[in-house]
Length: 129
Image (cartoon, rainbow, N blue to C red; front, side, top):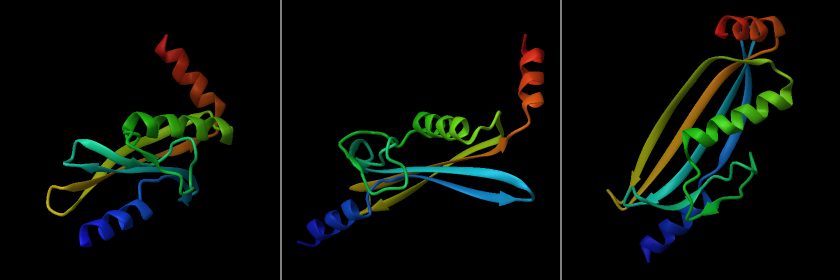
């Protein structure tokens, strides 16, 4: 019974995909997090929905807590914000275990500074050619 109660709590606090903004030293920083629960660290149970950010709308039995999805979310937010690109892109992840190895929660964090100066983007493209 206790296992079922803990599993229900895990579903309630299940994976979610979130986007947050902050200002640090006059720079606009975007922070993306996506989390998911896995059985035996292999079988995905529930993950955040990258298409419905900042809401409790998990996806069951699908692995969506990936770095690729975080970058996709970041690119979508950059284009919606009208930014010309990003600087200082950083990613990290946290793992939490429940019931020793039975359930594991992965959280992937990605952050970047939004760049609004078009000359930086154009200048970097000229140097790349």
